[in-house]
Image (cartoon, rainbow, N blue to C red):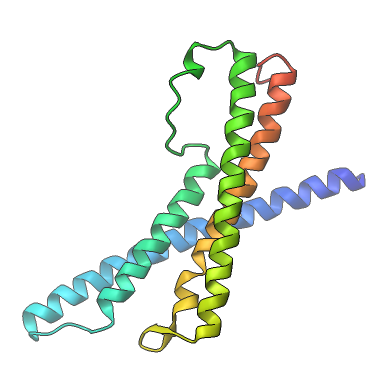
Length: 172
């Protein structure tokens, strides 16, 4: 096997691991949210008071589920988009427009990832805790990770669409 083929195989394995991690985290966090929310409701109705840390934990879990969901949406290229113009373009131009929008989305996501990373570092240095002594920066880690993954996926899409544009818009 050539070095290039080996690199491609390694890249595919890494992407598969990322997919498994995304799916597992999504399932675990969603299940945790359901259990925690139900437990909080029961505790409030039966005991008369809930767990003080449950509501902030649920808010953090919503953030994580939302961003992991965004990562999964980009994995399947199923993110929300408003694109009225490309419906009327020939295939070659559709692919070209997609290259531009993919690169723009990758750039914006990369900028957000960079600034989110700076936020995490600042909050880590500040030593702020969110609930039950969980550091705030740990809760924010999903921000730079998710936006970096999104940026990288859009770079891959840009390359794919560029190849498609060069071939005249066909998927073959």
